[in-house]
Structures are given as structure tokens and as C-alpha cells.
Image (cartoon, rainbow, N blue to C red; front, side):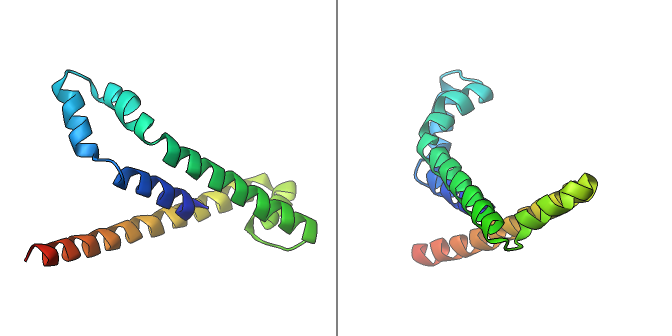
Length: 124
């Protein structure tokens, strides 16, 4: 689910010139919280809505169908383990979220380097 949310928000950020908008708002005297709430968030509403809808549809679809079909995916196993020992469920959920975060961070660094290389090749 997190990669879909990341992609939706990344695409939303890529479509606007965030640096110019932030500099223009700051030059007009806006503070950073004001820039975030009155400039960035309104420009990202469609991306945030897409990310939220993707998240809800994926979570509901994966859990509901897996529970109905008695198919043991991560969410169903966490539910079953959580009924006997909630502490293990919290630890497993945190570990999976941390793993996904580290993977996304690594992908953003790899993608950032690749984007800089192609941009440098176009300038030459």
C-alpha cells in the first residue's frame, strides 16, 4: 500500500514547481507553516485524495477478501496473532512498516541519482 501512496504523492509534487511557489510565498512574508497550509497543501489535494482512495481500496480489498477466503496474508495473520498476543502484533506491524520505509528511502536515492544522470546527459 505504501508504494502506491508514495507514487501518488510523488507525482503530485512533481507536477508543481514547489521551489518557486515556496520562494514566492516566503518573499511575500509568509511563514513556513503558512506556506505549507496555504500554498503546498491546496496544490496537493488531488494527489492526497488519490493516495487516500488507493490506500482505503487496497486495505479493504486485501483484508476482506483474504479474511473471507481464509487466505493467510500479512493482515489476516496479524489479526489472528493479535487475538492471542497483541504485543507481538504491534512489533510485527512496526517491523513491516520500518522495512517498507527503508526500502522506499533506498528507492528514492536510487531514483534520484538516475534522474540526475539523465538530466546531466541532456545538458551536454
